[in-house]
Image: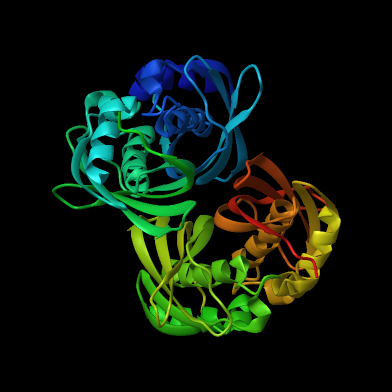
Length: 137
Length: 137
Length: 137
Length: 137
């Protein structure tokens, strides 16, 4: 079920399509995804845009927090940009569930660069969980 | 000078181009920008993607923090998503300088929807200011 | 009712007692409080401890978020320290409600120094709202 | 040197004294500390005050970020409260360095409860590093 929801989100989420995100591993409360930084994700000084890195981490957050089958809405997120990333780098985002109650959830997402394993960003996010189920059709 | 830097960033930053951001007002330590939410900025449930809203606020943050003429690097950012936004909505982001020292700066960005003036998101970000000047050529 | 809840919290919350917080104005979704920085709130370099400023802002957040009468639990908080504060300074914290649904709430708290009106810290917090009412006895 | 700075901070920081923090392990870029929650750290519903947990994590952050010998000033911090803690619980805070440049540093602090090992809070903080050295006398 978690995998089915993730594939549905990957297909329908327009930013996931634009970023060309690859689903690597998904289970309840967990997601691992990848993407390659393109020229059109760079800022004015040729470093990967903070917004692109945030959006990438945010998608791992969305997949992990919706994996239980109930709609999870992002309430807040915090991001630390720890190292710059560049065109051609392959990034991996790994989302872990820190806590989950019936109506709330807290997640941490680590964004690292494949190859040198450097931490590019650390993202923490909170969701509110609705009573409605995620519809995959 | 603040305006010249902003126009340079608007032209060169690929995410600003993708989001089709409009520069409304820029002065030292301040920026006001606009954008219209398109279909391709929506998530799987037809609400504007958190990543698109973050990227929009982040650009106002970048313009305001670089407006002094020295390169400002984002260290961290926090975002609260307070109301959903939809395709066709015109959003306004206004960045204000909370504090600025020689090497640091703290900014708050309010994202509101034109029309009903609802607060869509509140973004707080910190920069580290380098000794190098922003090059606009 | 908001005032009664605030007075109850001020009396029972041990940190509010230790900080010697003064309730200045309370209404539904809003709180304004004051405190004077003492010698025993300073860090090793004689600046007011970040933890003391956080705890002060956090109390305004708790009062504003519980003012509706339902128990509100803090989920996350973010704080920017924009200017240092010193022993003898009188600080004011003002909490405003950014959004509120049946089960969630988002608040911003500004901490300023009386006198020069400098912004000392900006705090943003989110709560999860329980079904149970705040008991004031 | 990191140990000497930590012991000096533990002695001079008034909040560390009030919280009765125990230094467990300190090395450059790392700190592990403990404390026991007392009755006078509880809020109005007998749960450990968010401000007390923040202050505890913040001290681990301060020790780790000053351990290199240069004065580190907190710029921002984010905290997620993932599980409640109660009087008598022994908490452990562990601070790790996510990144460090000459003038900036980013840290993550995990607060767990001894015994059941539950995550109580996750804290992320950023510092600006001054040119001046920490003076331990």
